[in-house]
Image (tube, rainbow over all chains, first blue to last red; front, top):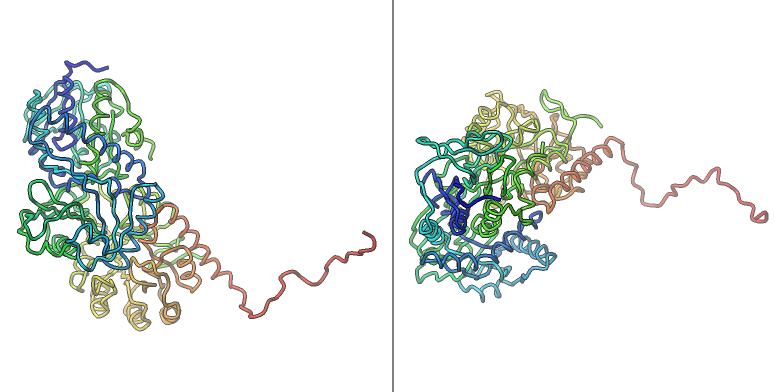
Length: 376
Length: 262
């Protein structure tokens, strides 16, 4: 059992670190978030904000889908609590996902996804092109098939990040931006302090929530570092004008389009192995626009607001890495890959219980850091 | 089963596997192990070749000691392909290259004039060139004659999983060239790989057939077995085909049963 006068350091101020920090201070802990740049400006910012466990379920990712499903169900509770602490809280948009296909090959793909979802007894409908256009009249006349997943949702992740930061600070949490943790000092398998360029901070627990940078920390033995690499994702943000009043999430096998509360539409996303390079590039931007336009032709007129790339924290098995490591007081909450916004509530509630009460949630069993120990 | 010789290298496995489009690196690693392959292709344009900053896909491939074959996927001109091949030589420390020069996005068929140009140039610069080609005997013969270490005609378009669409051309290519013939692209399931091997192809190169299966690791094992089965069948020499039945049980020496004694 941890005691409430402990000082907990969180490395990384993305959606995961921020969420954990906010819940910890809510329950009386003393917390500092160390962020090498600005709070919530990396992968969490670039994310589409889709809470779509059913659209994204992969054939060998059923446990991850269940985790996402549970996490989505915790969103109303999280947003209620956040409203108690701050205003300007985003709305959970339970819009569902409409997937669309434009030719025979797409249709084959959608049918394969449909059959897998049927096997799992999920709520899913296979649609004709006409039925898909009845749901979203902006869809291209060339759309020949669709898949309707009513239980998916989405949220304005940028608004959420801002609200969580305010909530965290209002309850007495400390944010240290432009402060890069260089080293975690560990003695006798126990966390002692975190060391930045300028100073050493004695701490009782450390949560590493540093996304794709979670491996770049000195002081933690190599075999204890999470196997994580950056995966680059580029997106395009457009202004949602009267030309294109998009209602909900549209996906094709090549892209997603999602309208946000702030009056924009986000179009994403690429998946590229480019190391830590986050510059948007011409080719992938061209392809994103083409793939978006083939499904929703009316994006043609929309003013461009932003082109940006982020770095997904990709674990070796593309599953999150959550829980206490073999070093006492060192916790991981990282590797959320393309699902950080969706997986945040359950990650946060489960890990905060573990940190404060020592309760290890069954939900985390498939995702614990120790799974990589036995690998070699 | 005989081994496969390409240029100065010998391989026990006749299955070459691409490293792209797997659900995640761990699945890739397990699938490659299950496939028994010794040679893995890496798309240079899609790989992060800067290995000094943290881990990446190459780290995982190197852990298992595969012979890495860089490929020029995504190049549309001879010039791009040559530059990319040189980049691969530097990054991966090998002068081998799988040469791809693509004609368009829809079909991903090779652009033959550009392919020939790039192959000529790279051979002069001491590359071991394995060109991805159409299933066109003349193109393949030209590539072999100019000194490519193998020719790699397609079975069907890349990523289509349509199987071996023109076995006759592949047989003609095999007869025309003296270097190994590797079927590259088109395999969708295990029988396709076996058919390629039974046709006398020297090896099969595949990627999507494994990485896009529902269960890639299982499919990798299926492919290993089918490539081996196809090659063994070829080397065994199949029985002649007959139109009419012929009993497989011998007619001589049958036990005569004396019904009255029973």
